Picture 1 (cartoon, rainbow, N blue to C red):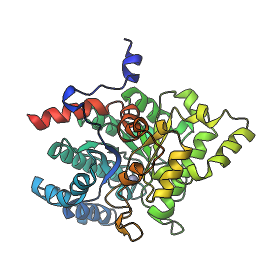
Picture 2 (picture 1 turned 120 degrees about the vertical axis):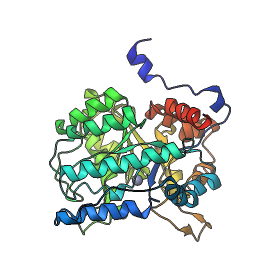
Picture 3 (picture 1 turned 90 degrees about the horizontal axis):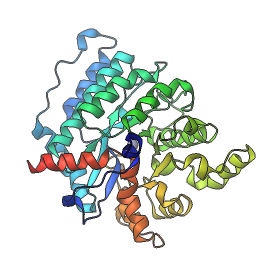
Picture 4 (picture 1 turned 90 degrees about the vertical axis):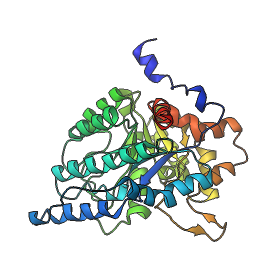
Amino acid sequence: MSDAEAKSKPHRLKPVLLGKNMVIDCHGHYTSEPAALLEYRKQQVAALNDPSKAPGELRISDDEIREKLEPAQLKFQRERGTDIAIFSPRASAMGHHVGNEATSVAWSRICNDMIHRVCNLYPRNFIGVCQLPQSPGVPPGNCIPELERCVNELGFVGCNLNPDPSGGYWKEPPLTDRWWYPLYEKMVDLDVPAMVHVTATCNPAFHTTGSHYLNADTTAFMQFLTSDLFKDFPSLKFVIPHGGGAVPFHWGRYRGMAQDMKRPPIKELLLNNVYFDTCVYHQPGIDLLAKVIPADNILFASEMVGAVKGIDPETGHYFDDTKRYIDGVSWLNAEDKRKIFEGNAMKVYPRLGKQISRQADAARA
Ligand SMILES: [Zn+2]
């Protein structure tokens, strides 16, 4: 088997993990951080204007991590019957627009190291995805050392890529511009996908999770549609979160625009490279997603805990209990559901299967 074939072949799980279809949540953030981490960030930001406020060494015990995670992500995983979360630092706290490149490098390393600690403490529950040390106007290729560190040394399987490090002012070239290519070359080389994920907005016109996130999802899709990015990078993969923003709802518009622009059909143009998650917090939204987007391109996700925390009074269940909605789509057959819950994640994150096995071994040791 050639290297290329070996790379494209999804990893087969060890027998110990077979026999049970896993439910892999591809979109979880570390939103139950110990207070010391948030305090550290506050001091780091304060030190931008007053160096005397620079934080000292970050000290967080394993017990502090456990105390916050147990009643949050872990409790919900157990209650809802999900097995593993692909886990990254809190997205709204990435704050790429804060300070400069050095600020972002230091903060990203700390956040990624925290994810690594969580994965070591709960090797059966979490697999790491990294925050990239992006900064406005700084070439994305500068993120390569941190991406390599996270993948090669910490066992992470992907990254979150922010198309708008300016925090709501959209000053960077589109994701399809050659500006981004050095990073894409490294992603392909490492065999890791990116989730397109902005951070908090500093533009008061946008609400971070209510509009900025969904705008970015929709914007990234339209950028992909109008480019030949995937001719240049046939194996590059992106997950567009939050159900793909407005995309599935407007699928006819996008198909029609592709046709008007003499682009190939979307299926041919994008669906070997672009995937959608299920962070859509109601049944009709998931019904539409599952009707419009092929099951091969949908990855189960909940983005719990954080984006929407409450219980839906119309159903009596948590809005972000998204497994329930997939279970509720009557026309998806068992094989489609297996793909959404497990198979597609294995395909999109080629390092995932091996990392699950590796962490399961570590848990047994
Ligand atoms: Zn997210």
